[in-house]
Image (tube, rainbow, N blue to C red; front, side):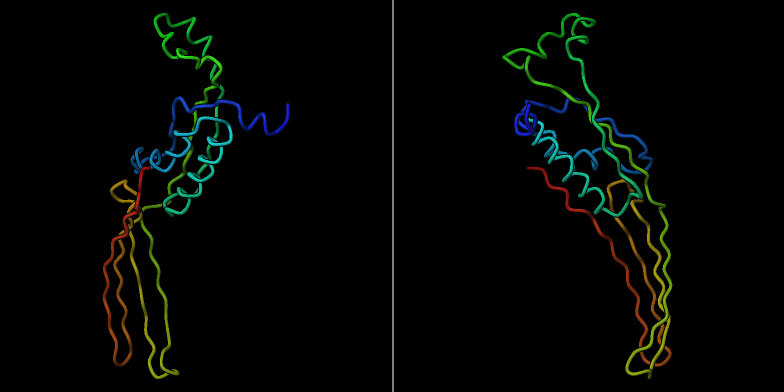
Length: 169
């Protein structure tokens, strides 16, 4: 069997199991994997999982994200659970199913950064510090507050909140 035939085999995601999320709402992770849920073959599901993995990493709230797929023996499950034969109706008996397991390791909630700087050809120096909260409400958001003190003319204060844009097709 060639690569092309394997990639075109019918495959659907049956369940998603999320492990390691203590603060992150599971729906945040699931929304990033939507493209994989919508896939109908090995190629579409694989591409959806890879794109979802990249999107999860871009949130910058995880130290590690790992996605694995587990084989599903649907026939054995149907034999052991009477009354569930509707799962393979309508010609879907040739479709393979997989359970997706997402393992995440969340970054710490606090982020502290301190810097010194020199501006204007050395005429003013200063110190800047930023305190951030990473994913405090579980939606992938980041809240930052900063203070910058200059030695002569400039002082500044900032407060920002970054909410990830999570769209569904």
